[in-house]
Length: 436
Image (tube, rainbow, N blue to C red; front, top):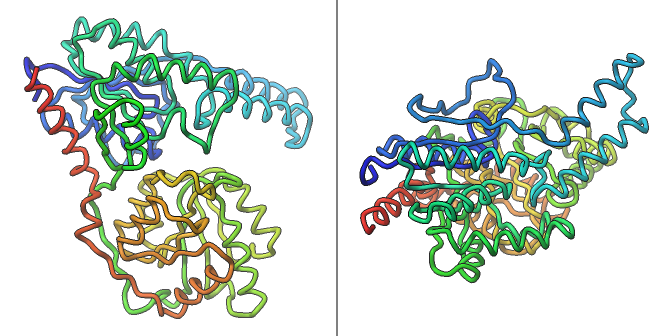
């Protein structure tokens, strides 16, 4: 509990009921802070109309969420496409109109932030800032936590800090803003963003991020006010493999649950390896299956088709968090696609923590260098790493034969439980609040 029954305001585009990795992190901040006695208010963007799906981790009703309406250009592109389809009753995916629409969306995403999120979320800054001022004045807000990306959240919180210097501001970096080489942006947006970060971030009282290497970068820029809060995983089941994989007589199943980034994080190495095993007659659709669910899977489908290994690969669409975890639990092994760019050594996506919780083999496809995700997977005692076709083929053979046995280090793995990670941040907030 904060002094004088003060409230903490969270500002984030990604939030419940969204179940993306980013939204899971920020929503967990809200849930656990509220559980530990900090009253929470949230400003976020208007989400899609509610569906019948109930998120795996419900949000306590005591948390007040203010969803801000905003309009971004991709809405107009969607509307144009719908109107075009109604005009002649057909939609040609390869037609000029579709190409223009697709190009427009890619262009908007490229200019709207470091990680494409389908829109100019800057369009909610003014409304959210006005609402934030009202909440600070009327609801006893003494703390603000904003989460990047996209940049709008930090801009809103930074402006509130300028307007109300007495409040404490925690700036959460799920990814780096300027140094994100995976999504470098384009000029002049990069120049503008550098100026925005330089203007606002020195005003933050505390900066949090997801890995130690990212923390080192931020410390060099903003000083020793950085704390690493790993993404972690929620407490839950544990599925340690038995004597052999594919033990139900249905063959070996390897699952991938996540997003494909063409040329940056994709399964080309796996497809080439499947082709080699298919050619040698070592695999059939009955003894080996690879299951993909998530976003941007079209590129992986094209790779499977080009390699002639479609019979071994199953593709699903985007699924709920609950279904994703179920697929992970039911699989014999899990597939992790590392960033192919070795400069991204500091990235440890939340997916790696979802995976290690199960204590089962992780086929880790990598560029070959060392990085945070590989270190976590390796120290967990679960990793089969491969950076070449020969290594991947050997790893698949080990999985199919049962030669590879995991040795899970549960003491190491359990330190990444999300609740214990967020508890560290809560204790920092409590200490800072008591030092006023």
